[in-house]
Length: 355
Image (cartoon, rainbow, N blue to C red; front, side):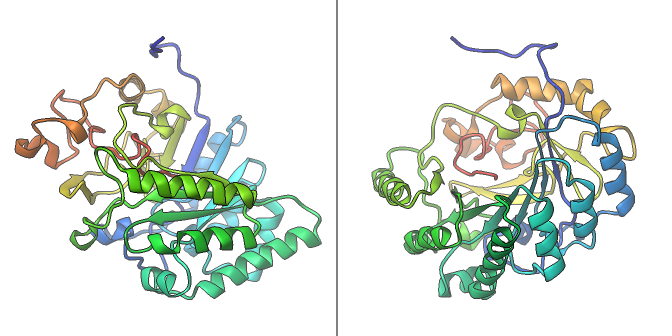
């Protein structure tokens, strides 16, 4: 039976992503920041405090310190952990700049630590321009603190963004995740941001037997090591599922803007099966213009949520007219006149996965 969502069926906000900064200490080859022209900024403490005051008594299922930037690169990282320590708190990080104080705070207050490791040794350094051994050392320090304090958390999650560049290292990264006592490894597909990466995707529109066979081997390999493995789709599937909408989530950017997802939190360029697309930043409000709850419950956002949840928007990915369509070149609106357009979203097809 097909389920539809109607006005009145919505529950309140349950998950909040907070982007402390959109700056980063690295310049990874496949990063979204490579395709934008925005001036990077750090979140002001006044914004962070206002967010906390508005949600401190809310029954949120999870707060995620993440975004397009590196949260541990933000001057507010210590304040943010202190403020949101009573919540189920997740940090997504490249793991490169975890000092002693931060490690102590993480072990004392964070429930889940998602660390990006997109290759092994030389390949990791080629992609991220950093020494993997330093990241491994940082995670091992955190594991040692967990043991010393006789704690179970934070749970370590390793995220691997797969492309033709690093696929050969995927089993080595699984071994490393096991060594780092990770309870989960998330494999996501790269969403190319630059012309030189557009042909390095591993997913296809139709039959993809080689990748499916590889993923079956990965399942067996990870099962034998006790790793919880989360895999993306490698073929285009009919079903569309937006994790941000389904999990009643919002993203608050470093500028205080309230966004429906990471994809619309910055203006970027994507390559969708080799086709260039401009994705425009789209905010439903700002925390200094209204409360988070009012923005979440606004008619504009609820209509957007209703439309996405019920899949009432076109699918550019498998449209017969896509090659001759100008509308598909930008996310401003789609051929149903929906604004913004989710019709090309690879996350809703589970080809790309956000932690």
